[in-house]
Structure formats: C-alpha cells, structure tokens
Amino acid sequence: MLRTRVLTAVVGIPLFLVALWAPGGWLFAGVCSLLAGVGILEFRSVYSEREGHRYHLNPVLLVWGASLPLLTRLFPDMALHESLLPVLGASFLWELARAWRQGVAPIVPNLSYALFGALYIGWLMSFAVRLRNDFTPQTMYELPIEQGVLWVVWLMAMLWTGDSGAYFAGKLIGKRKIAPSISPAKTVEGSVANLILCALVGYGVGLAVGVSAPVAIATGLGVGVLGQLGDLFESALKRAVGVKDFGGILPGHGGVLDRFDSLLFSAPFVWWVVAYWV
Image (cartoon, rainbow, N blue to C red; front, side, top):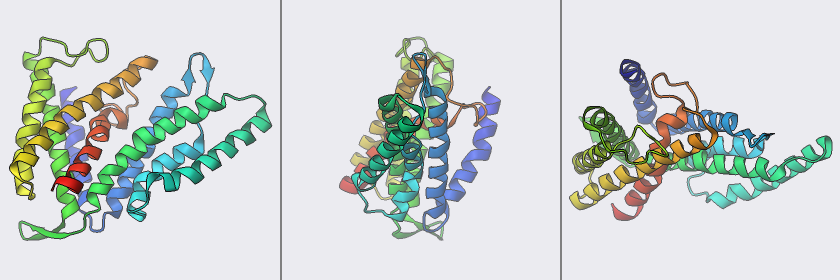
C-alpha cells in the first residue's frame, strides 16, 4: 500500500508542478477543471443511488461545477452568482423537460445533490486557480516565475507535508482515535503531527515567498485544521453511503476526492489570507 502511494506521488507531483509552472495559468486551470470533473463523476456515481431510489443528478449543474476552475481563469472577476443564476435557470428547464418526457421525477434530489457536488468540488477547487491567478513576475533560482505559482506551492507544501506526517505518526505512535465513528484510522497523534508540520512548513515556505512570520505560522495552523476537517468531511460523505473510497483512479490514494479533500477546504482559506493579509 505504502509503495503504491509513493509511486503514484512520484509520478503525479512532477506532472502537477509542470502544469502549475506553465505561464499564464491556463494549463493549471485546465488540470483543476479536469480534476473537478473526475471528482464530480465520482460523487455522481456514489450518490445517484440513495435510499432505494435511482436519482439522475442534474447534468447542467454538474458540467457547470466541473468548468468553474477554468471559468475562474477566463473571468477572474466574475462573482459566483453571475454564472450560477443562468445555470440554475437552465437546470430548472432541464428537470421540467425530463419530467415532461418521463412523468413524475425526483426533481429536488436531482437538483440538490448536483448543486452540492458542483459547489463542494468545483467551486472550492476554483480557489486554487484564484491563488494561481496572481501573475506578478518573480524569480526563483534565476528562473522567471509568476507569484501565483509560489502561493500554490506554499499551500501544497503544507498539505502534502501535513498529510504525510499524519500518516506516518498515526502508523508509528497512533493510539487514540480522533473520530472513530467517521474515520477509524485517524488518530490524535497523527492530527497533532499534521498541525506541527503544517505550522513549520507554513513558516519556512511562507518566509521564502514573502509572507511575514506571524501570518505564515497562523496560516500553517489554519491549513492544518481545515485540511483535516476537509478529510473528515469527505470521510463522512463516504460513510453515509457505505463506501471506502470515492474511486480508484489514483492507485494507493483512491479517487480524486480521496486525494484532494483537504485542498477543497484549505484553498479558500489561503486565498483569503493572501488577498487580505499579505
């Protein structure tokens, strides 16, 4: 299991960094939309069967959710409601047409599950693109780089290090369960290791990218807390439908939602820090 996780990371992280570094942020936004799309398909696959009913999650909302990261790059200043309102109108018409053709349909679950999936996955993922949208020119080791790349590297360094620290601390010294009813494998010791490492990496990398020490440490602690809450929230979603993983596209990690759950809760927080405190 560990070997598979490491091999997936060895292949995936360089590809992610290449997409992140590419000038203009277009490739990164496209990758984020692709990840959001796969995550939404995973969510749809699991949540289309609920309480003995077969739901057809509204495709208009699902496609909109998958496109939100790319739309954030295309229209950086567009507010969420500016795209949501016409999409809601189109989704209502879609459900009306489906009911017209097929008779009575579970319209509310079709819409509500789809809207939740679009916002939870697509909208939260789009905050990583918002971070990347800072195109201020910088240099790193005499190589040109855009400031947004550094913000995303800061975020991902905290998440990856904290997640790895929690995994190994839990395996080696973990005894006390932090939330056994939601995620039996997570321990208090692993959670503390996550917080400590996030604070240390947040401080170290934060100073390197131009963040003051107090803000960097506070951000690291915030990412440590929110990343773990995102992980627990995703675990609760899985437990509600009795599945272990949302998918298997990333060997050793599960699906896209299983791997990027902590990012979904942390990216909006780091964007807020960068926008208002840096």
